[in-house]
Length: 256
Image: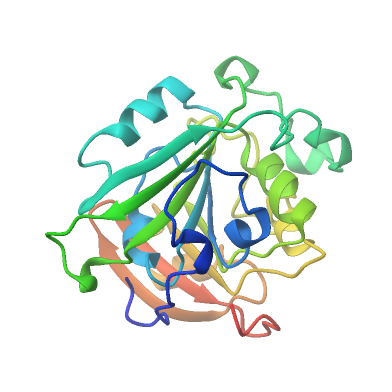
């Protein structure tokens, strides 16, 4: 975990370590890390684990079969094993009607179905991982939750955080795949729909943004970071490029 972030105790809802129950939505979402257009990148778990115990991933380019196979592998996350997992039922999460209440301006935002042929059938796969006994407490939290959504990142945020009036502690925007990556809108652009959806959440806005991509200097990241997130907490090189952790300078969510 990044040393600049406070490490938090394991939340009560993760004590049992099982997905054989209804998802505790507000606890699962509040103070989580949200990562749209995530692909199969595990960096946020490595760098945020302990500060966040719940991770919500969203990507419409990966099928359930692909993701479930990857996450079942022994080394899906270094030092952890998959303890419990299941596909959520339609009665537990509504993934079908999300776009009906999102106000899109195609001239500014793009067209959500531009890459319809590359979008998988929506699904929600809930997993809980447990740290291996061979790894010390300094490696990461005892357990963490991962909810992987096979759906668009804008729609997923609206369907979960806005609907349940929850606020993620961190939103990660790392190589979101605009242009040749088949992302229909720009997650970095503060005028477009993803930023408007996150910052327009009635419950509040995230304290941190974790940015990564081809922009390799703090100054280049400063040009794309959202308004109000001017404080650079940490900038570091990783195996996949560079990550910058930015904090909201006007955050009213200081307990997050």
